[in-house]
Image 1: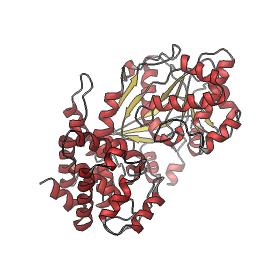
Image 2 (image 1 turned 60 degrees about the horizontal axis):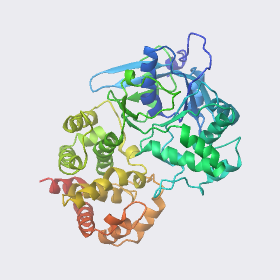
Image 3 (image 1 turned 135 degrees about the vertical axis):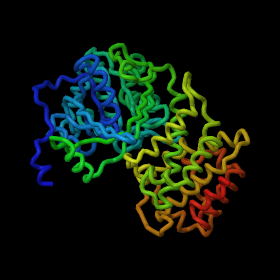
Image 4 (image 1 turned 90 degrees about the vertical axis):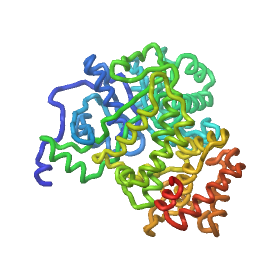
Length: 483
């Protein structure tokens, strides 16, 4: 450790100006391991064509670390058999928004800034889940509407930044969501326009007519990184990096071809698929990747597996995954043009089997109440409409219900990270058997749609899956259904 501390901190060996043309909100690991990778590729074709201002809205930790390193950080690509690294230098400026909101607002109003990207998670869009419209009762939105010079939310900063541009005769920037949620461009547009119209209908009309909110699909596994891994990575380099990221080799970015005239970057040259409709890619990924990730998270975590690699290395879970893909998930998706679904599924399995990617099941299991409707419940709904099997998908939902109790099969207790954690615990404490558990859970209207709440086949199949898992355990239950 002393030897590591004696190494020089990663820094630029040249002077640079903070002359940015792209602003990114949310400096988490995914942005730095995914989006910055494409920005680096674009800069190889046209030097300094992408110059990013990285913004944190909530916590300053990453800003502080990156500031000491002049915005530089190391991205370690972990393939199944090799490790490679690259220093990314596309971040030119860093802002912790609460410290200097005026600076950020002025940056958003600069004429040269023509693209704003976001990875702020679904909660930061401040939408009502059922309608996907702006939640005007959200505390941050209430505050931001009253404080135009010191907003708190990503939506507040975007709208007030756009308002400055309108007042100064500057065209709006393109708002590009890189968050993992369906129709993310539409979600962002709803939030921004909802806020703008509340502030000034003419501003909302200007944004609607001249702004752009392309949807995008992002696909790369970026596991969280521990302090021990940071220290280990420092042993591999001649410098000390306090903000490295780790990611797998695979990467896919699909963006809807909808930009303002000013934001015409050459994404295609960097390997991005620019298409007229992201929907098919989005649907494919949500169900084939995110759906099976959640399956492995709940089934694997309850069985004592800490990572996706450990879980999929179990023969029963691997077989279950294969059946789940082929029998229940793939029949519900349509292949995008010139895209082979069977190859994609095999590629997914290979990615899950990468021993060097430590993707924690407990990390994927977070916020299941917000994730499962798109990842699993939609698949169940589609299969029920056509009279197809839902048995395997019900095993996943049964495992999720058990997970929400906060206890695994070895009787180890854990914190359930979910907005509804307290409500779930109340249900578990009051339910006397698996039937009452299912009755209470499927009546949660903001999770289960009406067609599922009233479907006797779904209810019966879920009760059987849950009761069987409780009686004989997760792996034995899965073995029963894949015979």
